[in-house]
Amino acid sequence: MRNIKVILALILVIFLAACGGKEIETNMSEEVADFEFMTQDYEKLGLKDLEGEWWVADFVFTKCVTVCLPMTTNMSQLQDLLVEEGLNDVHLVSFTVDPENDTPEVLKNYAESYDADLSKWSFLTGYDFETIKELSVGSFRSELEENPGTDQITHGVRFFLVSPDGEVIKNYYGIDMKEVETIVDDLKKVL
Image (cartoon, rainbow, N blue to C red; front, side, top):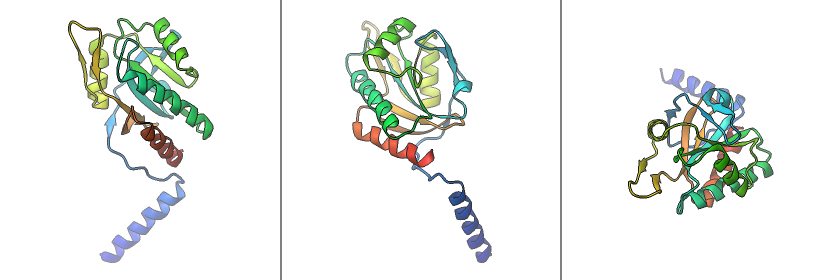
């Protein structure tokens, strides 16, 4: 019996080596619920459109006066690092948590202010707050709450790595540039 376990372990190691990619340390395993929303260019983008590619998601809004500023700056830095490393098959997706204010025009201006390459980075809107809350909490395990009496929204500060199968496999602290470098390192292993 022990010999069989050793043989099976060796076969698994050989199989993983033959597959090419290295494993990354994950900290999540959540399926992303199906969605189809509107981009900053009034085009539809959904889970089915992202199928087969790695993508990094975050939740931000344009009126944010705190965490969204460093998060979006870091996502812009991630965009640049991906280009530098030749990791061109990764899509970035920023979901607004303030869809009432963040129309496609508002998101497009916001994207341009961060030098977003809109062929690889999509800003999504076109839903109500409850829909994005359900996606944020249900699929990404990321808090999201309105704050009555203010235009600020409480939301998580994580970036999320999503596999080509639509599974959130890892989250990273989105306001820490070192975490952005970790995303790039992880993507190098899986691509």
